[in-house]
Length: 72
Image 1: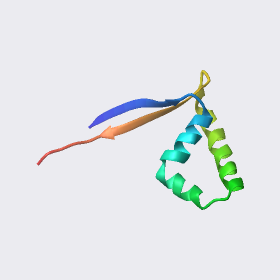
Image 2: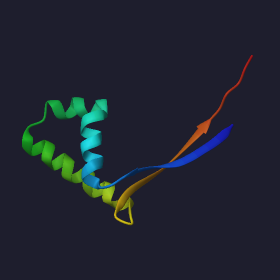
Image 3: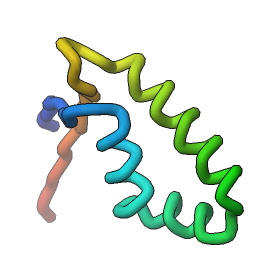
Image 4: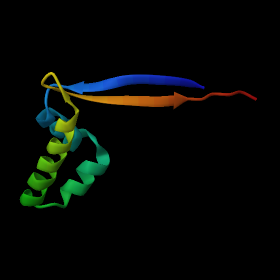
């Protein structure tokens, strides 16, 4: 088992929301049926949460993954 770590870094919470609302299939699908007011409310909530990861004016999300392999 190997542990891999890194960061996902973006220039702003706004850029993170633009990325997620364009690329992340579950979010895109959920928002496709929402009205403008709901999309705006969800966007503001996501950006507010993303700002909790702000470092030096950038959004920096740490990540960690366990990589396991085997052979028979």
